[in-house]
Amino acid sequence: MVILLAKRGLIRNVYIISMVNIAFWALTLIYFKMAVLDQLTSQQAIDLENKYGAHNYHPLPVVLNRGEGVYVWDVEGKKYYDFLSAYSAVNQGHCHPKIISAMVHQAQTLTLTSRAFHNDMLGKFEKFACEFFGFDKLLPMNTGAEAVETAIKICRKWAYEVKGIDENEAQIIVCENNFHGRTTTIISFSNDPVARKNFGPYTKGFIKIEYDNLRALENALKNNPNVSGFLVEPIQGEAGVYVPSENYLTKAKALCEAHNVLFIADEVQTGIARTGRLLATCGHCSCENKNCSNTPDVKPDILILGKAISGGVYPVSAVLANDAIMNVIKPGNHGSTFGGNPVAAAVAMAALEVVRDEKLAQNAFELGNLFRSELNKYIKTSNIVQLIRGKGLLNAIVINDGEESDTAWNICLALRDNGLLAKPTHGNIIRFAPPLIMDKEQLLDCVNIITKTLKKFEK
Ligand SMILES: *Cc1c(COP(=O)(O)O)cnc(C)c1O
Image 1: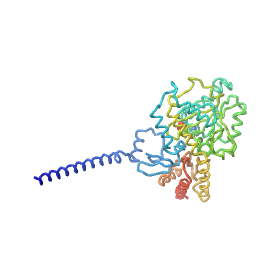
Image 2: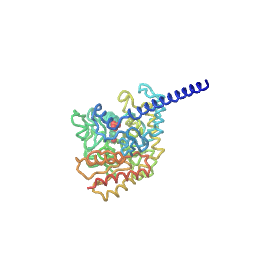
Image 3: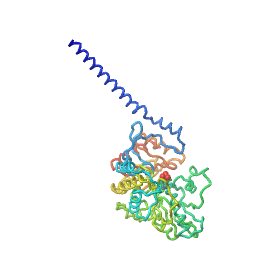
Image 4: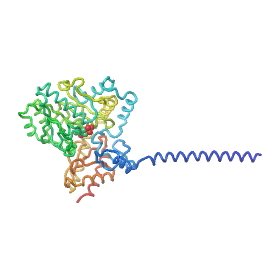
């Protein structure tokens, strides 16, 4: 009897243990399936994009699924330094906790009212940004291209209502090799055939001149009372990080003033600490960088911001101007359902606070100098790199090979294999633009990766 009971207990114990065992393995299997089987490989993810996505980009073959600070990870778990920062949108580093927390909090509270009603975040953001950058008013949009479109519209309306140009006669001067986005009007004044061809008919009213050429600007302004604006990138980023001569912007601004023409700075890429100052044109900004005073301020009449104004977590863009200009915009003239939504407002304020509190302009200034001086040491001995140019942490190297060769692309593939992500821009140029929260040790580690990789391409 006793033996029998003991046996039964034993059987029950064995039974329980085996059930626990089965449950354990079942859970392990489910977990395994979730973690491994549902996780696409890089190739699977690329194949999906190729099959179902429009082919409007040619990305470097790497598939990312996580980012933190200056690092990103691919789906296989390999870690990289991000040396592009989403074209300078992620200046504050990936998933900055302060920005993410502002976004999550606002997303749980109120996301979108449209501008049919007021919300309690937009005004706060507008005040914050106006004081931050030194302007009277801000018009919020979502993408960089929309902000450029907005600036063009404001400039034209100002031309007719304030400057007194005859209807439909206003002209805006732009620069060759510009990049201002991808809308129909913007590509109308691009000279990149890939961006432009077969998208006509094109928008009229733009005069194209050579970048960094004051004589050309003067000639375009002279004897042409219909010119109302000069739209310019303080550094041409997309074209290959072309830094204009020392006093180009100051003198261009003076010429514009003399001809009663609005100086419109597209700082979508150069703005928000990227070039070692809060703005590449600086203006009366709240930039903490003492080095700023070495370069004269150029206060744009219209300032266009995008990309890093949200730290790359949400599409936010903005156009800033003083009342005399911005007041030409009346209800119904312009707008966007999502422009100035509460999440965008919360995110942008947090993103700008990070730039100020973490002194990112100062850091970009110092690390930029270090980066160029370290790379120049290598370039002196190199026959594969011609030069490095840039300001702050917006830099590019020019590869010593034909424009049509794929050397720059191959170097970027090799950099990827060595744990650093960068991408060629036009021709044989590689842009280097890491997040501005990088520290000195990380930067020197990157210099090491870059020079080690380039050495393999020496001829
Ligand atoms: C990226 C960029 C734009 C366009 O911004 P999107 O958000 O891509 O529309 C406009 N101007 C400059 C200088 C840029 O770098």
